[in-house]
Amino acid sequence: MSNIINMPESVEIAIYSLVLIADSGEGKTLNVDTLAKRIQASPHHLHKILQILAKKGFIKSRKGPGGGYIIKREPASISLLDIYESIEGPISETTCPLNRVTCPFDRCIYNGLFTKMKNDFKDYFKKTKISIFTGGKYGSKIQ
Image (spheres, rainbow, N blue to C red):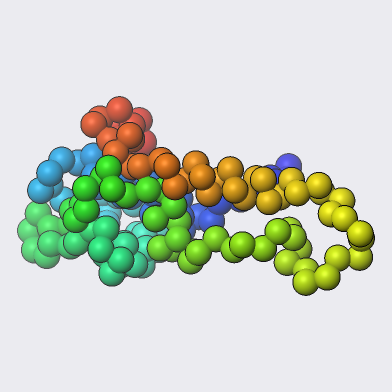
């Protein structure tokens, strides 16, 4: 079965990881192996994504026994859009789903549907902060 919208796996991994790290408690770390098991991701792929998130200032790593990743920013200040764009780059402003410069029709046969979907997606991701998924409400359900 086909999906109309596909979220990049790297973005899902980044979002789940940040929520779990933020939900682990202030000053507590989560390591790559624990996170990989919790979100069912390849540790190697996860490590690459965590490096990006650290470089962008969302998390920082602690080395040594008991080491891992801790949240660096306040969860209420991190939107899903911040995470998405840190992994994928800015969401395109194009209105054509095929990214065509010229259209063979006088008006869009989709009647702006893809623009509306993109704008709704971007608005939701911009206003949704990861703090609403912390506090034990969601972290315990992701196993």
